[in-house]
Image (cartoon, rainbow, N blue to C red; front, side, top):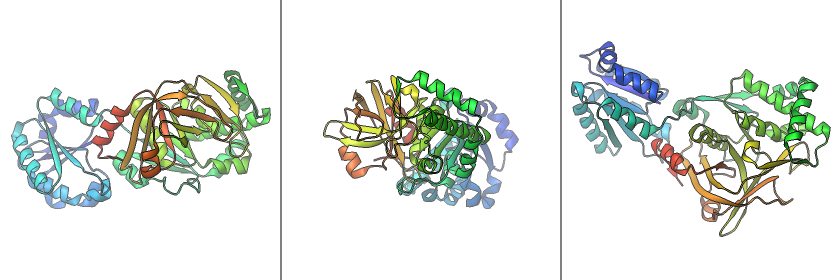
Amino acid sequence: MKIIILRSSFQTDEFVRTEYAELIQRLENDCHAVINIIGDEMVETVHAPSLQTTIPDAFMIATGGVENLFKRIWSAIDIETMYGPSHQKTVTMIADGRNNSLAASLEILTYLGNIGVEGKILHGMNDEIVSAVVETYGRTSLQGRIGLFGQPSDWLIASGVDRDYLRQRYDIETVDIDLQRLMDGIKVVPQTEAEEVAQTMVKCSKAVKEPSDTDMLEAAKAYLAIKRICQEERLDAMTIRCFDIVKACGTTSCLALALLNDEGIVAGCEGDMQTLMSMYLAKRLCGEVAFMANPSQLTDKTSMLAHCTIPLTMCNETVVRSHFESGIGVAIQGVLPLTDYTLFKWGGPKLDRYFVTEAQAIEAPYSNHFCRTQITLDVNLKPYLLQHSIGNHHVIIRGTHADAIRRFMQSNGVQNV
């Protein structure tokens, strides 16, 4: 998180760091805060461009006399551009009361109310303030690097994310990976390394149906080539325009995505950035891998979702299959346990909407009419999906995580559809 400390011109940055040394250290260590100090003498030099990349999660009011400085900063920030017009941004202030900090915070809070902006003050001793910050923002940091292997699939006309927004709001850097680089990488994967991966996959699966030994080797090469690029680019997550690989290389990335998710690199398909961010949050916030799936069959009581890749660790058992749409390469038919799950989607170009619900899995079916891994949940998604859906793909997380997700979304001003 990012915190801007405001001080009057009667004090210095050194005074603030000495006076609030313990609190600042706690915020940096316990809350992973990045802290900047702005003095009141800078009020005339505060400009919007310098703030758009450092827009804070909270303001710490260190002294009195900073009310006009705050007003100048707030006026310079284009909130609608940064957060989207549907957001109700809550301004959080930290004030322990020393040096007239609480008095200044109360004046600022009243100013915010007068212009129709919600605000709140976190006040108390250091322990109370740090606990309140953790409760408000959690310990979740989304900072990281995401690789985009090619552009989103042509049919995904509403699943992109504003990449500048990701960088500014969540400190996420996006990296473009040319698919030709991957295709060249597949060609030079050592045969022995691919054979080892293929053999391991066969041994840990209940059965291998359509794929030949050659299919297994080519899928293993794709996995190793993607993994190598992820390591070279220091990626925390990636998504791939996978059908281009099917056409150009005669193999699939379904096996690669399954294995990468299990190894800690969040991996999604079809270049769907909104769903990848849903998976990424599931990993960072809930500590869980996620199943990226298509809603496929809905009734008034149940919802079935399906896709051709899934983290192996989510499954009771797996069967190695061909890719459903193309009949090419390797896909994963996973049998999921009948337990509690969280269905989730974080969407919108500026990630300003979300949907979350919890449900029980009542069946792990199989039909040749759908993608290879299928699961039926005891939830009626018709009212949401058929009228207000946030895109096609949704993610399924093992366990009950709706409350944690809601807290994260509320603290970031994201609206529940």
